[in-house]
Length: 638
Image (tube, rainbow, N blue to C red; front, side, top):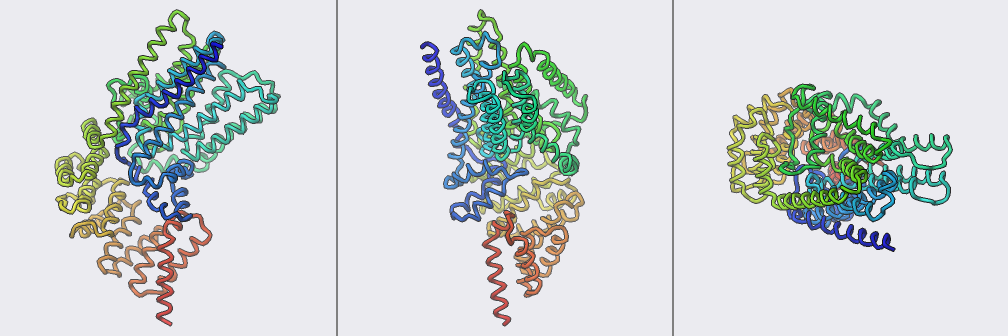
């Protein structure tokens, strides 16, 4: 009876704490979109039309290798809330609260099934510690850069499915008495594989779920009477997604480990060296958030050029090795600590290792950080009864401290301009903090201040063409402010700048505004000259298609169709991209070169006939308009 009463109290408290998490995060809901939020979600605007083509284009056109449709469908359900971020953030908070409950269940089951028998006998104590530790995880301030960053719902949903999968694995193998052991083993395998699919379709790091399940299986094998052949086949079936991932990496080695690094200012080994410092930083920020800066914009994170450059690199490596060794040493006596350490390390093994991703993002720590709190649970259940009361007070105090700091962080997220100032002051050398600061000024209609801000800070980025282009873009955002970017600065930087994808993105953004008629007179001339100079900059050779298209469009709108045709011809030698073909057909029609227009249109039509290419769906209406124009031209000729 007392056990039942304890369960009811703890379960009721878990719901209350889930509500408390919503309260902690809610001040951030009044915040703004940041970084790639709008780039990934702008397609929501077209979903109000209700056409299947638009839905397909949005769901199939996501980022990553597989597009992350499981995450995008949750955004699609909210398309009526676009373009305000408020309710998108609220859904993020709900997902985070659900993940808190899943971590609570996981800790309960692990502490009962895998910790010492002493801990397992007192169910009420296990439930209490699992609840408090799970809440400490959920309230950790480092998660604000995930929960408040709308597009990182993808990371949270991947974590959701991974937590569901590992919970089912633990329950079916360690607690369930459903049918036979063979049946439970097979059910566990199917459950993990299905959850892996859903996790991967949310975000690619979900493919690590099988490894996390095998960590539990290895640290404390379940007492299942399963035949050796079935066990062998089952384990390899669970690990099959990992085998598939390794196969992809081997066959696409050039793509992932050579070509991808040409876009980075660090090498393969320098990225690995840098992670030796970064992974311990994630752990430190998770467990001791006092005085820490939780900032999304770390594009200028210092690269480790070697094990001793800086010296903290080798210390970080030593710490990671020590953690790995410890996990093996304590496996038999403290399997929960082993599981926690390996969950943390394996959770970081994809995004924080060899792939050519940016160096530092705290949302990568969202799921791996669960491992740190599993370690904490392992320590607590191993303590003598005499000190359990002290441990209880300590964990509660830490949870309260985490909650207070998270609440303050959420309030900062709810004040975008104040947040932008804080981020810029904490990292003024970052190109992103500067751009973010300027964009926030613009979003508040402070165009003059944004213009002045660029004027005051442009000298901090002498080798960047992106900053002068962003400064130029202000002339398209505030009619009352004519951009005062010095033309000589714009052109000189374009001549010598190293390649920066953000420069091309900014140029594309300016072109969209030019096409809509938003920019002041003279902007097109500056963009044209800057684009021509960038075409002559060998560092931007990989962007020649986009640059040729930009130049061609400016000439097209100026009525210089022959010049536009020349630059589009150059673009078509490097690609048969649908948007380039579309532009070339428009120019050919403007030149009355109908035979060439028909030839290009036929290429487009053959590309899109029975095709699932998202560009075909995005340009479907425009392509239909071209077809009607061509038919009209034929009828006129007839």
